[in-house]
Amino acid sequence: MSSAYPEIYVVRHGETEWSASGKHTGRTDIPLTAKGEEAARAVGERLKGLTFQAVWSSPSQRAFDTCRLAGFGERAVKKPDLQEWDYGAYEGVTTKEILSKRPGWQLFRDGCPGGETAAYVGARADAIIAGLRAVAGNVLIFSSSHFLRVFASRWVGLPPEGGAHFVLDTASLSILGYEHDLTEPVIRRWNQK
Image (cartoon, rainbow, N blue to C red; front, side, top):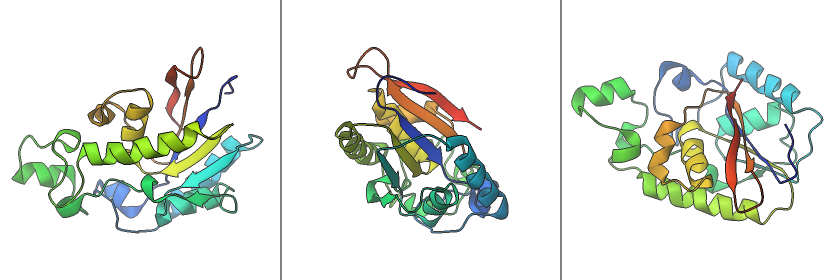
């Protein structure tokens, strides 16, 4: 899984009660389920033997616990910009419930009342990307699905709304990097379990 250029290893947090039920979990800080904890440990096994110049985590309990259980908690720096999308009025609500009241709604196009727009999440992703480009070496990141989808979209130069086309399972591993040189960011692997 290695390249001559720096790689960004991206881990979505393990399962929570809300992720299992499809509820939007932005800033509500809920723990991993037992299954989520087990999956986080398995991520650590997959990363065994790899070295990282830096380890960054969302400050959320679910992301940081995934980081810790994977064996990287002592090295991790919590970055507020890695927090999940702020869903505002849609926090704790499923997409099905939202669509019953607002037919045609799409998160990446419409954002959330009282929460963030895709553009705002994209600005946070851009700040993380700027920080990554200043690190000489591989970086490991732990965060949440919708933020990471916007992050991947911005990494390859797409608008934040492009994140709608990238799906991420809990405790999945993805790798962002470069192709021929540092001016060609690419997605090397995506949503691997």
